[in-house]
Structures are given as structure tokens and as C-alpha cells.
Length: 433
Image (cartoon, rainbow, N blue to C red; front, side, top):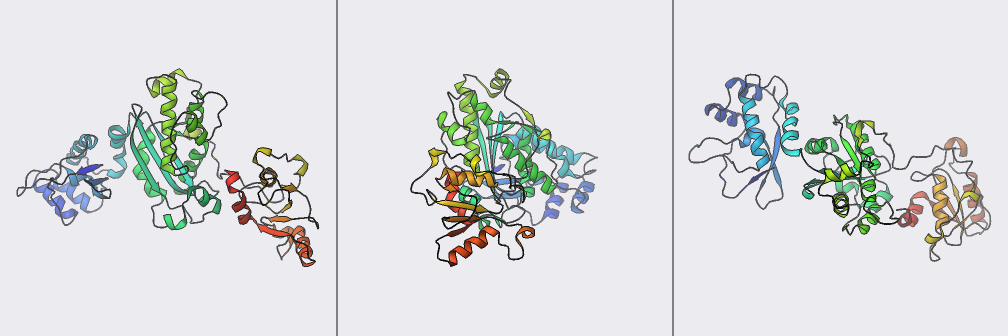
């Protein structure tokens, strides 16, 4: 990032051609390279720069901030951060080289970013939020860079998923709607801004999920993601947690006195993940992340290239693959039972296939809420929960035999309520997560 102070004088140009003419006039680049750039045979790496006190950034190609000679009493901006000061001469040197422009410069510039800006971090924590059950539906990402046991940089992006299909249950969890992301960049565009961070160890809480999201995005957009090492903050924090602490982000944060401000905001979760790791290291009385890793070699450090990713957050159950489920196998978790809940003490039947959970999980949710599970519709049925029906089994009207019987009993005056899948999730979401 380049920061421009109010007192800095900036030479402005009407277009790239005028800028290149000046660079050539000042003997900073040869005419042949100027011509190559103008003919679009060379792509120039772009950077963001920020005016002091302003959160919005402007994008500039790399040659926009080369320290120019004085011209009419003005000089181009030279007050850049230390990392970019190291990069600028490398670009300028290459631009003066006879071989400059033999390949697309955009593709070559990543090495500078790796070497000068992103290397030597302790680790980078990340968190994804998704729009629906498919793991390629990332709608936000948070990244937190840690160096010398201190958070030095934070990034947050809203992401436009491949489709604007949002499930109600996801909106309930992370609060992100299609309206929030319809004009946001896709991950393909965001990747170019964050890829340098992945030359470090990446840490996530329940890393299998976040790595699966990244892998699905790689496949979706055909991204060239470098192989990198990743770790799970669950296994890291286990070394520091006393007693039987649950694996959830909230439970681990509480156990280590780490603040979790806004759970399921990607940046807040990435911040919490980073702080869980930092506090785990301190509690184990290690002076650095590397010494902690060396001391606890049993903690898994995995390679992204070896990931067996999951395409779905919860794998859909194929229709017709649920006939062997027995209601007698479902044992209620009495700790969750709520005598005030709509389902408590009611006779409940389900029919069809469910997107978010398999049928056994749906039955378990109902039982945990105090519902009485029944295998068939009768006069005593209180609720029929309806999922997706297989048209090849139920016929053209789309109604299962349970639905047809329920509708007949309703016509006869029996008080049976039929609830669709979305309504069902509305009633149980707070218990599902």
C-alpha cells in the first residue's frame, strides 16, 4: 500500500502515454519499452494507494510512483512504505533491462510480492462465510496477518458468489444477503489481491471447511493457487485448554479469554482465530510461533495439495437412500428439550429429502426439541414436515402418500399442520448451530 500525505506534491498525467513520454524524456526507460507498454504487449502490476485520512483507495500502475526528477518545481510522490520502497527499484531496474517485456510482466511480479511484502509472517488466519450449502459459494473472507506474535494487518472482503443463490439458514448465520454482494467482486478478482499471503502458514478454525471452500473456488475459477501449509487452530489450542473444552470457536475463545465480537463475521472470526493461536502460545510459555510448533511436533501441518476437499458443507443425501432409517434409533438429547417449543410433546412425521440435513439429522433435531417421532400420518399427527419429493416416486402431483393422507385428514376436520423445509429451518436454526 502507498500512503500519500497532504503535503506531498503529485505529478498527474492525462493518460499512460503522457506518463511514458515523461519517463522516456527523463531517461528512466528506453523508447522500445515505452512502445511495448503502449501496444499492450506488457502488463504492469498495479498497487493501491491511500490518501491520509481517507479509507478509500485509488489504483495506480507500478510506474506511477517511481521517484521522478524535479519538473517545474514538483516531484512525484516518494513517501511510500518501507516494503514498497524495496520493490520500486526492482521494477525500475527491470524496466531498464534489455530483456524487459519478453513475457507478461503481471505474471512475473508475484515473486517480488512474495519476497518483499508477504514473507516472514508467523502465520495468516483466514475465515470464509458462504451463501449456501455449496462450498464454492463464498460470500465473504477475512484475513489476519501475524508477525512476531502481533497482528499487523487485517483484510475483509465481501464476495459475489458464482450465483446469487442464498439459503435462509446461511443468511440467519452470517447476515449476508444477495443485495450485499451483487455488486462486489468475485473471488477471481479478490485472489489477485490476497494471493501473496498464501506463501505463509495458513491457519483456520475447523480448517477442513475453509480449505474446502478455497479448493472449490480454485476449481470454480481455475485459479493458480500455490501449494502451501495449513493448520487448524482447534489442534493448536488443544495444547493450551484445560479440561474438556468443546471445539467451537466460541468455546475455545472463552477458554483462553479471547474476545469474540461478532461471530460469523469473517474478519472477526479470523481475528479470534489469530488471537486463539497467540494466546495458546503464550499460555504454553513459548516465545514464538515457530518455537511452539517445534515443541509440539504432534500438531498436524498439512499441505493444501493433499487436501481431500468437501464440495458441500453438509453432503446432500441421495433421494431413495433413507428407507433404512429407524425412528427407534433416534435418541433425544434432553439438554436441548424446551417445553415451550412448538414441537414439544407433538406427534411429528417427515416426508421427502432435505437439502441441509439428511433425514436422520432432521429426526434428531425434532427429537432434541421434544417432538415425538412417528413413521406414518394418522389422526393423532400434529405436524408433517415436507422436504423435496422425488417425482419418479410420488407422481405428477408431487405429493407423497403421507401428504395425500394428511390433506385427506385435514378435509375431515383433523388439525394437522403441514410445514415446508424453509419454515422448519426457521423454527430450529438456533438449535442447529
